[in-house]
Amino acid sequence: MSNITVCSHPLIQQKISSLRSTANTPRTVRELVDSITRLMLHTVTQDLELTPSATPQTSPVSTYQGLEISTKVALIPILRSGLAMLPAASDLLHTAEIRHLGLFREETTLQPVEYYNKLPRTCTVDQCVVLDPMIATGGTAEAAIQILRHWGVPRIKFVAICVSRRGVEVLAAKYPDVEFFVGVIDDVLDSRGFVSPGIGDCGDRLNNTA
Image 1 (cartoon, rainbow, N blue to C red):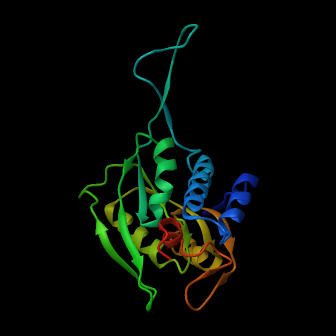
Image 2: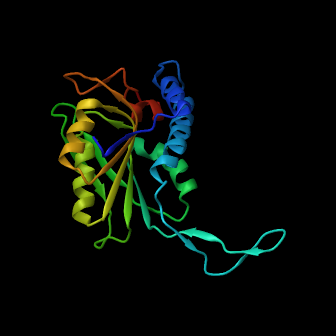
Image 3: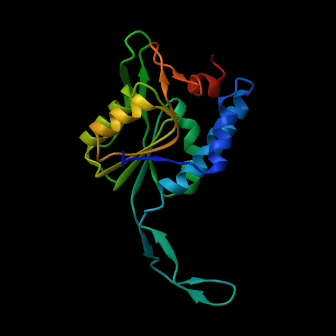
């Protein structure tokens, strides 16, 4: 599908392979998620618009015309595991707004539950970059997309490290205007809503709460 981009760079793929391992400590999981996010964002942000800076800049040799990113971006980490992707994203997009969404998947029904949303009444950005390490059934991702569409954001980019094929393809077909940037697509989604081989419950692995 044209709105799904797999970030297939070898460095990303090697780090995702490492992230899958149960031998990792929570610290290693956090470091890998941060590194993968940083690498993926080069693809996610490649179409941001540039504008000349308001005042001339000075290099060691002469003055020059500086450049600034003019696209207004909001970073939307999905609590709680999306928080691990935020440091890399905010470091690269240091002028971006940061807006949190609290969503979790109810274990029995696998349906999303919203528990935190402090978006302002009026949309203030050109695009949102949603951060969530996993897309399994796609329920949480869809809830986030619906919230942001209702907010009125013109463009949504969803960044996920590991996704199920069924989950991401259903979302991409239902929301053709949303761009999905993923690290790896796994084929198996079991009856419990777990992706295989997957990266496990990323929130638990990040926070040592398994």
